[in-house]
Image (tube, rainbow, N blue to C red; front, side, top):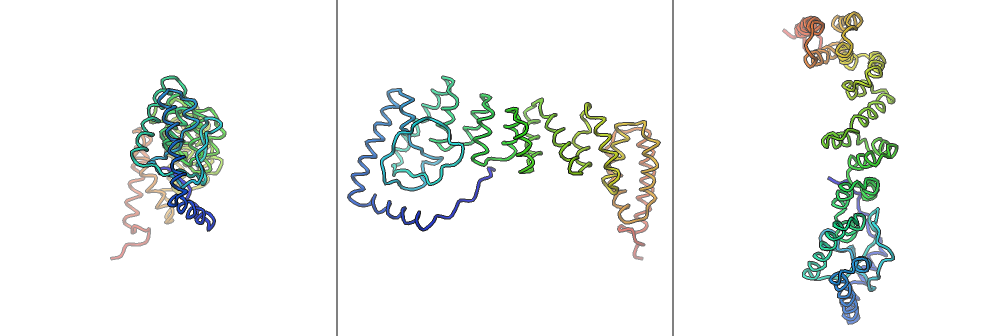
Length: 333
């Protein structure tokens, strides 16, 4: 679901203007104003029908996703100076009453223009039709992405507050890594952005994964850093260094990191085994929780003689914990 800002409450002045506009449209002056709007729309449709796309798009009026408008205008629409995407929602935009049949005719012209622009390779203008005229910002972002207009797609998505993971991925694909990382940190959107890249099979996903791991390590979350980068062969030395730092945290994090270290560096068994046995022999309640984490990690680890040895000792320690009570105290008889 898209993330959007909560709509601001209309001020008393905005409400007054809306009532005045409504009253004007219902008056005799409204009939004359309606004729002027109708003439504008007629000329606009003629421009589309003649195939004069540039001029037609300058005169085009936004319909929005459902043909609705943000309010009533008391003036006649004016052609825009240039055809350019609005990189953020328009504040206080107003329109004119349009019958459903007329809105349907206008929408059909816009769809035809969209197809022509795409065929002609005029992708930015096609995105303008989708986002500004038809109110389909998500469709405009997808169109820009399909045509590798990643930076503009990211700007549009960010300005309209679409999903943070989408924004991060687009900045990443645009090779603007600094903006991607800043957005990921600001919105905590690492996981979503990474999942989007990996689902698409994008080779840059591994780099984003390592970048996320490095960020986790900088904030002291070595468990997450190792979990993210453990399978990245080029980062093996860095991961082992993170493991050694994470072991100092103790508890379940250290228990899981010990198993990961044994998996990545089997020769480390003489170093890992005494640390595991210390966790198994500790009668503290916190150590009991760490033993459960240790058991889960050993079950998930690839089979090896070293893992089997530690697993047998862990099973004995867990049985002892059960005998003492689930919380480490003597069981109630």
